[in-house]
Image (cartoon, rainbow, N blue to C red; front, top):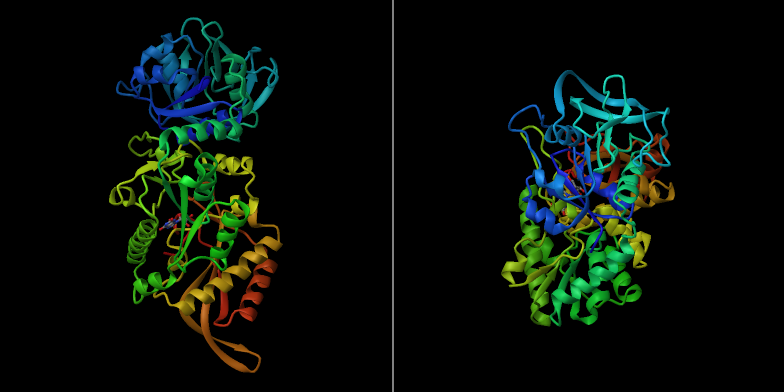
Length: 515
Ligand code: XMP
């Protein structure tokens, strides 16, 4: 693959956004830690490099630096925030700590027209940007000029047009800089001259070839869960290797209502992908009987899953490869400094340990993609939005939504309540605004009255959160009218629940799941 952009990560919280924005402009981008050796960088053959922001200060001797070999590769370089300061200090300019930190919205005055601003910003205009820095540049290296400035940051945007080196004190990758994405597009299209035709259509073609090369005529097994990642992986693999692929769906009995049926239908009828459906609900429920501790539930479910999966595979024969829906955020080597951990997305691999145990190699065809891109790939392959835009669902399923002991009766009650809740959310057109919504069944009975009689039944808690990546979350602000409607339906239609409450805890301090 030619025409790639490399982002060197100096530990900013938003480094991944840089890569996402550049990819959105149709250019393949990878993130390497700043300390990547220069020969690895050259081997990658980037057509341009972007230096990310970061929490460190170039005024400190030990601060993280890029290898200075990047400046003689003859390719454009863009430094963002810490990246700009680094560019300046490594090329002979000056950076100073300022007593005043600048954080938040700011307005830059465009001092010069530049290829970086082409079609977006013009000399004399004032534009909104997002600043977040303590240090600032106080003297430019030779060859550089100021192309935009603010009152407190006279070097807000700088350029050496001849060498094609640029620096921005503000963050173009965040949406708080309204036209920032266009600046990044200008950098990769106009300045680096990359055409921008990378996208899911190209990825699909190239990845199919890669899978064929990796797998040859060997057999691949893929566990599917009904979730986006494993479904897209299965579809892509099926396009690549057809019947050399076998998908296994383990029904733990802890899924949402009718989920097993829906997944079977989607795979067998719509996509014609061979699927082994294993109804293991009894095995899981009996393994969980009497267990209340959340971590023990997870362990039991993880282990039982592996046992069932392995025994299903063994019935069919020997497999050389296990397919997994590992995503790019799980793969990026994260750069962290004291007190400034970059986000590492929590991953819960329910099949951990399987490849070694069954002596299989891994096929991970979407390990270079972000979640949004996996969805786009699914759309590219004609998969339904119902499957692609689903809320995430945890591997242990309803087991961690029934605090305390899990019984078949409790699972059934929860499935019914959850179904009604999601049905109301969909009818109200709110499903896509919410990251995750689900019902929780509390192992607590309270008194109620229905008709003329007293009831003594379970409490159901409703949860809905908005989030970008599941790491932090806010509770969703439903209207009281909506909550009343959902509550009414649940109490009227579900035998076993006579009280509904809404969870208004954000994460932190809560977690999204109740266990
Ligand atoms: P928490 O509850 O930690 O959830 O705020 C964050 C995200 O992770 C999901 N989650 C899990 N997913 N196995 C999974 O596959 C698990 O054990 C597990 N626990 C939480 C949760 O649904 C949310 O999306």
